[in-house]
Image (cartoon, rainbow, N blue to C red; front, side, top):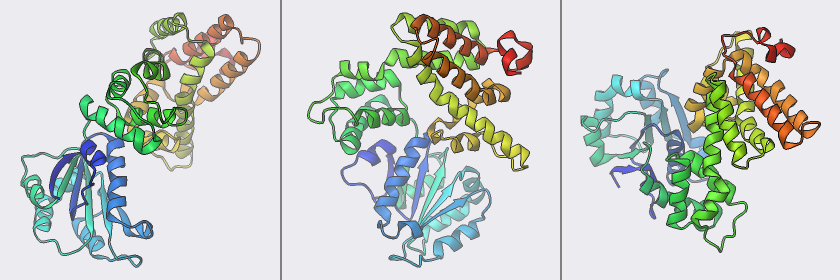
Length: 360
């Protein structure tokens, strides 16, 4: 099967199309690219030799001749098939467009070239040629209607439970059109739901806590931005809506610990003269690839010194809430103190602020 399709259609198709000699994954959703690539590997390569038959190429370091050499090299194990993945290839395609066009017309190898790009204009000759001979999969952000079908498919595939279309639509309404975030919720629900009883929209609302989850992120965003008043206002709304401060701390601590770890990894790299990007540090800290851009933006807002101090602040808050400040009114004060610490502008040294005196 040649031509073009969306990532969602590819993933939920009853008969998954086999990858073509040149297969392109384009669009900006990292989760969808990863999911499609995983499916491509399963379809193209047997399980027993896939480890030896996959090559990842850094498009910034290799030439088109290097790519051709890798494509022509047979695997020493299995049936000799190869899957060659060209990562971050936007600039590479621009430089070698004519050569790739020629390759698509006279392919001389059984290897499969997977090109990973963000932009892929339909007006180019290469796009039109691959409509006839290749496979092009659009990994852009999907529409809500597509996600409803995909969520129903994922519920059965990964959790062996059922979602009605109304329940799936409720998930999209609450969490938005982010497949990675939606899939996380599917994984969580698969641990506790009754597989014989389809979930209703009301149950989805109770499980995900849509408004509350959104307000927690709004609060964290405002604090990282240095907008203390807005962050405290969001906290007040959450508490008036029935959220206990301890539960709120648990929700904000998960991403904040990763920010702290990423900042430490980044600083150690600098000290060892092995500097890495902030995005790479976040990924090593455990941030999923499809959340990297948003997490990097928040971490930059927070600033280096506050990010490194987060582990200490979170530990103090956790110990306080488990001890003398376990009551809701006292736990709220602990949480407010944490927000103020985060929200102090990053241009202000920690030691010049009364809230920070013990941390200087």
